[in-house]
Image: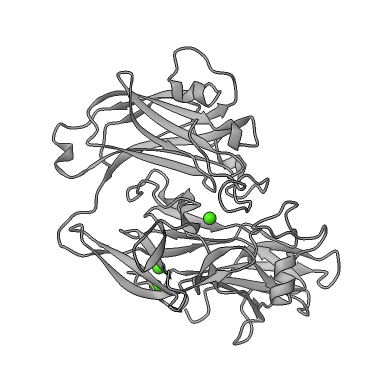
Length: 437
Ligand SMILES: [Ca+2]
Ligand SMILES: [Ca+2]
Ligand SMILES: [Ca+2]
C-alpha cells in the first residue's frame, strides 16, 4: 500500500476521514447515468459517460496488483480511444475522471494498456473527484480500474460517475497569462450543528454551535455554520506561495501569486499576507473568502445598505477537491494537482524561506466545509427571520482574473428560534444579486 498521511502521523490534527457527508447530493451520483459500461472517445467535443460502484469485495483473479494491494476487487471497464491520426498535433490527451458523493470515502483510478499501467490518480484526503490525462493517447483499448481505498473510507460500497474526453492544452499563441477565474457556488448547508469529532484539535461541546476555539478566540456565541465553495473556471491555475521566513527577526508574512503564461513562463506577484494560527498550528491566507448576512424582506429582496453580520475573512487550504459540476465532461478541466494536505505543509525551502504552495486547478472547485473551524457567522442578538447569505472570493482583489464579477454568490436563508437551543437555519432558495452588482 502507498503511505497515507493521517492525522496522527502528519501534523497531529484530524483532517481526513470524517463522517460529514460533505459534497454533492448522493442521489446525483451513480443513478443519473448509465450502469457501468465501456467508454468511447471518438470525437474531439463529446465526453463519454458511465457510472459504477466501487466496493470492498475481496480481490479476484485477473485484476492488477493495485486492486489486490488495497484488498479489494476493482470496478473495471474499458476505454476505447478512436481518434484521427493527427489529433495530437495540438498538445493534449484523453482525460479519464471519476467523482463520488462525499469525502467520507476515497477512490483510486488506474489505467492499463496491454497489461501495463499507463496512468494513475490515487484518491487522497479531502477529495471527491480524481482525474488523469493520457497524454498523446494512442488509439486502442485501455482497461480502467476504480478501487475503493477501503482503509480510508467509511462506506463498504461507493457509487461513482466516470467520464472520458479529449482535453487540449491552452493554445500557446497569442502568448498571454493563463489567468484563473474564481466563481462562487451556492451553499447547500446552513446549520447550527457541530461535528462530534475534533478538528485541528478543536472540539465543540454537544449541542453547541461553536467550537471552543471560536468561543475563546472570537467570543463567538451562536455560530451559524455553512460551507463556502468556489470554482476556478479560468484558463490557468490559481497558485499561492507563502513565504515563511527562517530568520526570526524577519517579520514579513508575504504571499505571492504565481501566474502561468501560455508559453510556459511564470511570474510571481504580491498577493497579500499569511498568518499563523497557533491553536490549529497552520497557516492562513488572509482575506480570501468572506461571507455576510443581510436582512431580507418577505420577497427575498435585500434590505438595508450594510450587512447584519459578517464572518472572518480567512482561508487556510486551497485545494482541488471536486471537478466543478458545470465542468463535468467539459473542456477545460486540468489534472488534479493541488492536493490536501500539501496546502498546510512546507513544499520546499531555500536559505531564507520555507514555502507553502497551494492552489486550484482549472475546472476544479474547493469546498470549505461547514464543519471546519472558522466556517461560521455569529448571529448572537440577530432576530429570527429571512436573510441573504452572501459569499465573495478574493474580496480585496489580490488576484487578477478575467472576470471579477462572478466571485460572489448568494442564497436566501431562514433563521428560526434564534437565541434558543431550538435554533434552526435552512436554505429557502436562491438569493438576489450581490451587493454592489
Ligand atoms: Ca472571477
Ligand atoms: Ca477543501
Ligand atoms: Ca480577483
